Amino acid sequence: MIQTNTCPKCGSNRIAGPHKIAGEHHVRIDLPGFSTATLESFTCADCGYTEFYADQIGLRNINTSGRFVLGSRQVYSDPYLETPPQGRMCPYCGTRLRPGSLTCHECGHILS
Image (tube, rainbow, N blue to C red; front, side, top):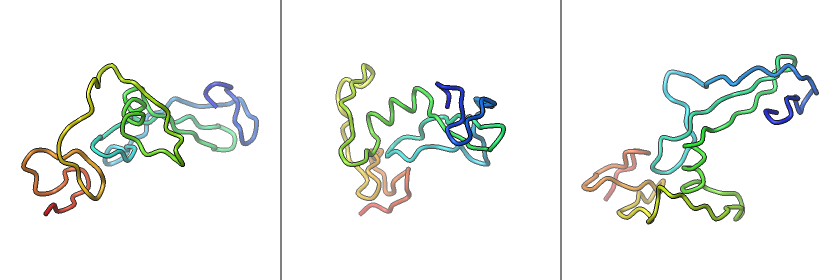
């Protein structure tokens, strides 16, 4: 929709956006260890069809730590991450844990 300026549902070219997604708390994409990706929306002013897009920092986080469907992960090199992160991981959500943590700061899982 943002590349064609056309709604894929109804064909209208009345596309509104970008609009930041807001709520009581931040809206985020569920990635282990990251509060990531500011989301923006584009909405068809005629039928209401809406698409969401992640910001560039969020895309980098998705490519380095995201879950991918059926092996569709592509090799991604990030100049900011020269070595993989080290340390203990939460067995429930996979978040990298802070040293000495008794609970996961991401999902709240109680560590044994």
